[in-house]
Image (cartoon, rainbow, N blue to C red; front, side, top):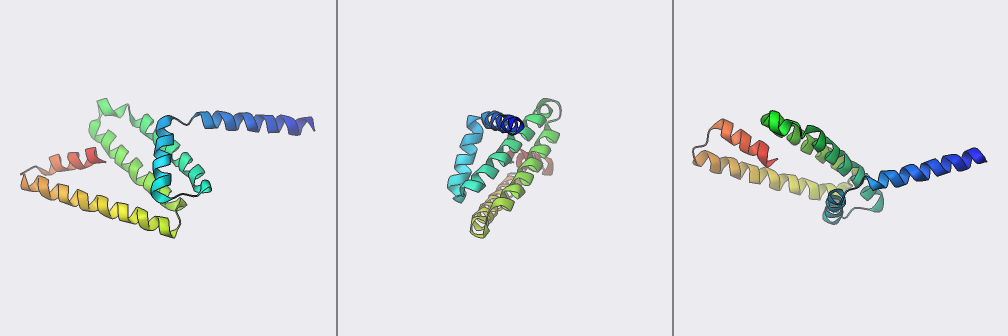
Length: 135
């Protein structure tokens, strides 16, 4: 019996510590995603895990911002793509339609930006850098 109470106490303590890792930025991101996709409570908890992972990954690559900016931007883009896939996995069919529409709008905006930059005479490298910075 004492062992069970001890384990219960440890679990409760670890849950409270885990919840304290949530920053206002993560709370805001999850609130925005919750409203945008109309998430269920179980999906909200999974979204917290995803957003915490995003924040941790971005913090890990922050050292590259000064030393290798292109690498930083490439890794930031990879994180964005990976997180988008994680979000897709927790959504149901109707919610995925909203995500697909968001992706379609992002791609159209990217295409328009590329077209505008080409008309301005920008080089391929400048366009690539702009796209990486855009994220």
